[in-house]
Length: 535
Image (cartoon, rainbow, N blue to C red; front, side, top):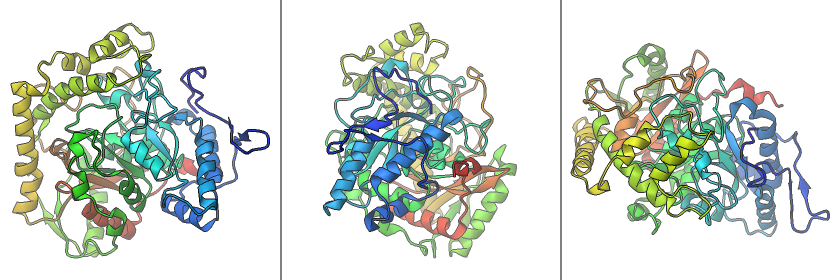
């Protein structure tokens, strides 16, 4: 396991946790475990716990042992919660008294390390935040704890969710460079890289990721798992290190659609401390109730074909997925390649302005011992700290140079134009004009080879004119603030690729239903071979 933060600050791996009522005051966690948790779904664990076939202590210890034994060069986990076993013991105690909190009670879940959780620093992968021990949980964490979830620890990520520079920067300075479990020479994508790897490797029952423009669905696709990015502010962002409240969301990363629905049932809803979520409760559904193996029957599905370099690699797999959709009763409608326009210029203006405003607001709430209180402080720290200064920070410089925040005329225009291009003239227009229920497209290409840090790239929001080629549906949905779910559709040369289902705002229940129907019919997920090597 990657142990990076000073143990005097925070014990990353607690192999003995004090438990009230134990004769010797501690329960040792074995470094090996005979308990099988790999490829066991969250919903199966939930059923096993309810039936008394296992305990939360047993499965929590098994996940810790797996991480310790197998994370190694994968670098997917930054920290194990020092009270993980105490949480598990409390869950088992509730269950013994018939007081369990619900189907997630006792289920161990990892959080991306930009999500606040009591007892662990939220580093966002940066040494500038190594002492960022929050005084309370994020709203997502609070809701998970309220449901009895075991907050197992923190997953690695692209530093500041990938919003630092355009040059290649694999992972984070705190957590190192995550590797794809299907081929460690390949990228696990970002920014929820650790969450994707940890889920694929059964290091937890599920993980929580965050997305601004593909950071849940991208890593989910290349790591062979399910990932859902909800409508903006269906899930509160309070207590999450931000890029842009216009585009930031958090969501489940799981090994099945049912597991994603079970988590969304818990974390979705209005939070008074995230004013953007004011209307979330009005749009809630019972997401697990939406799962239906006949959901695709009669659905009109708009097909967005892959373009560019991914066409040859992904098209045969996508064709096979479309055959499954048709066999399940869907009516396929081919969409023109130029059906959507690139919102990149607008997204660049939005993200640069939002990052300065929203990050400054978050940093202002951090403990006094955190040395950076503003983006300007973060830039100064990263220029001088030996652990940080080897990486460029052009996104930060450009964001710091913005003025007037969300009131700047360029920002106001970019937000209005971005929403028009991606909503009324984008996704909503396609659904309306072609009488569609849902859009589908390949989520990504297979995982690319890991480039050395510092390799020049254009990045997702380059300055300059609008790109003329078709944009990815992920980017369009990001600017629109609309939901996506990706489901595994198989392997290309041994590497996973997902299929995306996308719709208009607040359609999570329908998307989960269609994705579940496809998943159950296709059974396309193939776990990485190395996940079984600890048997």
